[in-house]
Length: 196
Image (cartoon, rainbow, N blue to C red; front, top):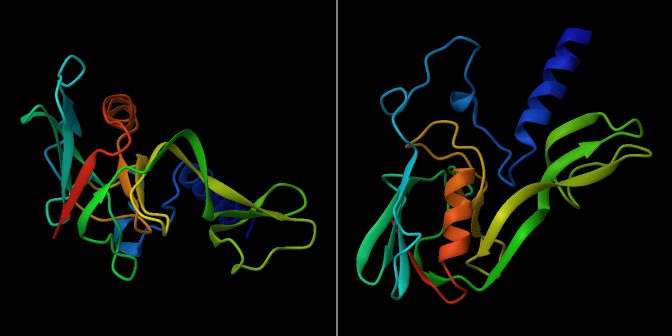
């Protein structure tokens, strides 16, 4: 029982860095199991846009789970993303970046901790999941947040557990380093097209 609790607490601590904490059972890897997806050690992204000029735009392909970034009409980078799982799919359509926050926390998803600070629910929804006596909700980190919808969908840094596969509650997760590059390169108003 104690080992199981410790395993759950460790798993919760590892999941905390992103707003998209939910990992369907098929995305949970056993220790020592080979990581599915692209060739091992293949890059998660490529960035050549630091010196690029001109209008920016982003295209996100939900089928490929990749984003392509353009400046001045030229592709300056690409990245794997992790978008919403079935039941919480990322919406397709044309959007623009309406808000940027370097260090944001989710007000919807996170973890529930007890009075001692131990995680009791690693996939908690604020206002829905029960709060233990003396406990509280802790919103998941969403570094380099770039809002796309009024309903809380945006791009931000987060884990990409299985490149090429969905993993989030609906947001577009980016590898942490790529989120930093994009946050610096894309101004508010940048068009973002999400295609299915």
